[in-house]
Length: 269
Image (cartoon, helix red, strand yellow):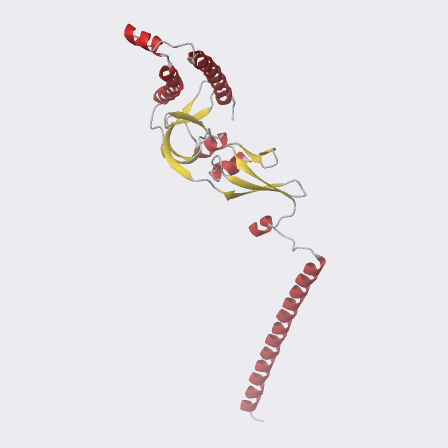
């Protein structure tokens, strides 16, 4: 046998060995796939799930108690009449606004999983960050003061005088605002921001007092001619007494609303 014949036999042997190695690798790979498929089928038959970090879709199918409710700016008011806490960081980063519909799943281990299922129509408003005498952060916008979650203050690093874009429910009278983003840091100094806060509060009080002027009887209006007073003098069947009683009730209601507003703004976030 010549040297060339030995070389050909050697090359053929190497090729045969490489083919056998590749064939063995394919067999092992197929066997592993078969085993994995068999394990998955076994888990499915036993009603178990694969271990590991749950995916987002797994949360939707999580077993537990499901409650739906409405976001009130801080909590979820459940349809069952109960109040459920919402993580402030979640509410702030998700930019929830009052009126948003939520679904809460309480898992068997006690975890709370929230999902927004019905966002309300929103409107975009520009406001100024202010602080009251108790240190609570507020947003002055639309001649009103809106409360914000403290998590938003820390997340956006808000300071009095910052100009911010906020989200509000379009068709609801809200008490809380959701911070969308900061437009300008330090747009106003603290003194100017405080002045805006006071002016906003005064504007609100002025609107509350408008109904008194509109409902004053003609006899209480200055510079009314005497002839008009005689001509308009209430007769025995006049309901002026009922009107006066209604005004007193409205004043009492106004006082109660003001006390509730002061108590609400005075609370720390």
